[in-house]
Amino acid sequence: GANLLKIHDGGYVPVMIATAFTVIMWTWRRGTAILMEKTRHTDIPLSSFVSSIERKSDHSPAHVPGTAIFLTSDPESAPAALLHNLKHNHVLHDKNVILTIRTINKPRVAQEDRYTVEKVSDRFSRVELRFGFMESQNVSQALATLRKTGLKFDIMSTSFYLGRRKLVPDAKSGMPHWQDRLYIALANAATDPSDYFRLPANRVVELGSHVII
Image 1 (cartoon, rainbow, N blue to C red):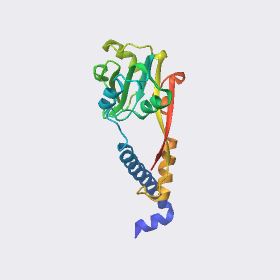
Image 2: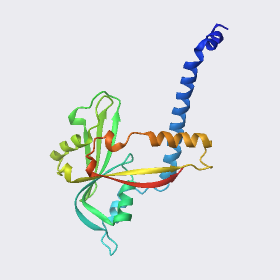
Image 3: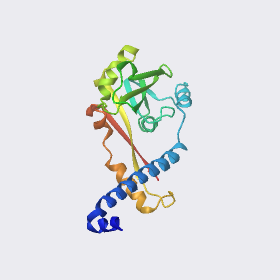
Image 4: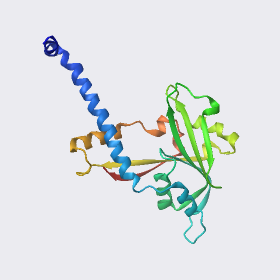
């Protein structure tokens, strides 16, 4: 009874705030799970893609000098930005880096644990950068340390490719229409990755695609 009186006296405000945060978090997690499930059907394994693209044929893309870095959350699949670049520009750089960025459950990461590098082929490498949750994720600075591994490139002559998705609500998404709209609004409000990762603005290329959720 006493708690009910507190709600009438203004105690409903923190209850409403907590409810709003719960709905937002639930919507974000549910929407992200649906989005990942839908895009998984179109994913191409990176190893299969590299084997196919490096096979000589009349339809092989033109090769251009320089390094292209493709940011992705799934290092096992060919990034959407890489596929769109090939589709629209019909070119492949001399060096291609598939880059994944992880935030680990530590305040800071020691320099010797900052990265792992895996050579996929002569033209492709897979790199994972790790940051602690208290660190600024300065990707340009972290990539400069990779030169000692043999990945020698000039950061100011390297192109960073980002995939940008335009989300379109679907009546059969599995979420109510209002929740679809909320998830899309949250996704659109997310920080621009080129700013968040401190990428050189004049070296960033964004390639978009429509995804129905």
